[in-house]
Image (tube, rainbow, N blue to C red; front, top):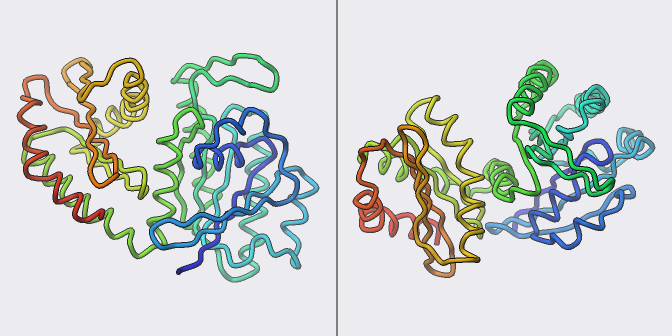
Length: 311
């Protein structure tokens, strides 16, 4: 089995450990988390790949240790997930400074692994459990912070393979999507994501949709396609919160489909179970589109093809 190492880095309280717990669905532990002391290692197996996760405590004294030449923390890493607490605006300079130090340390080794920057705690109604104080941030303010951080990160990460993602423990889909991108970069079986995407693109174009996505969590499959940037921006904004609502409502009432009306568009959420796997299909269409017909066509012409690839 192929072995991979992922290093989780960032300042203290940036959300590294909570990200891992949410990924593992250990939500009960999140409430009682304490600062990570030095390094906590854990292993998972996904798609025939054994992944060693190095969760590195972010206190200043530990950060200095990781950067030392004799440290084994940064060595032989296949991927670095770097966390920035989007809510802690007063620590942006410190977080970016630490990221710069890490990149410089890698430059000295002659190899810089790909970086994923997680702008974490990106939730409009973030609750600070430690102080039992609610902090409400409107979407526009989060977007403004993201834009400013992204601009600074793009300069800092010049020449480094990287991606930037908004993540939150209150939105597990955001965590799964981020990790899917990491997985895709170094596992041969990630080719299945590309194959499923080909089918998704065909489905969108033949039915004149604006956007669509498929998520299968067991294998960390996530693929999305939009016909233009405007559709993509709207669809991405609706997708994760819509899926959370769709899943939560199942607790009260089992429904096969849920449709949202957004101005001149309709967004439908539905799910399928086959071979012990649960697939979530989301589509965005124009108001006049026949969504029932489109869903029927997906079931008869596309769903089995996707299941065959995934299985």
